[in-house]
Image (cartoon, rainbow, N blue to C red):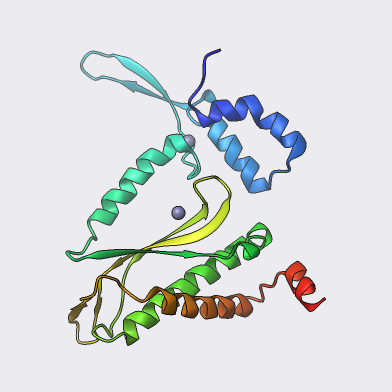
Amino acid sequence: MATSNHLSDILTLNLAHYQQQHKLTQQQSLVCQHIQACRTQALGEQQWRCGACHYEQRIFCSCRDRHCPRCQGQQTQAWIEKQQTEVLNCRYFHLVFTLPHELNILAHYKAKELYSALFEAVWQTLSQFGMTRKHLQGQLGGTVVLHTWGQTLTQHIHLHCLIPGGVLTSQGEWHGVTSDYLFPVKALANVYRAKMMQALRHRELVIEQADAAHSG
Ligand SMILES: [Zn+2]
Ligand SMILES: [Zn+2]
């Protein structure tokens, strides 16, 4: 049997069976529909013709869903090119902030609030260190990307932060990092934990089962 490399073929072969045992959310089934329809007649087609030789080509339209591997390639490339125009001429640091897995359940029914709490807590933490650390004391910048799955396709919610090693002071001066690391990890983790708890509380995000287990 010929093997296929496309996610859409895998979905066509197995989705119906999968759905007998697993319930998809509305968003998940919509994404599956998009991926399966991508570059097929379902989304219509474009007809291209060369003005010189009249050679014609039909191209099926793409779905442009951000989960679609066929469409993502181009978007990823465009994103990389845009990021590259903003790269500063300095050393960069890569920091990862992970959400404790006990809180994963919140992503199933309050995803938007949870992710906004995570971004807020992480950015407040980093900004606070940028403002208060000796030799820095200014506005930090960076690119922060949310990943909701780990490499083994299990739920693993974390933020990747690409941080230029320096700050802009209120006088508009650049203060670069002189050490081999950006911030001390342990101190960073403590502040992040406190900020995350605070951000969850502000949004009234609680895990009922865990609370019940602790009070019992
Ligand atoms: Zn697509
Ligand atoms: Zn990741």
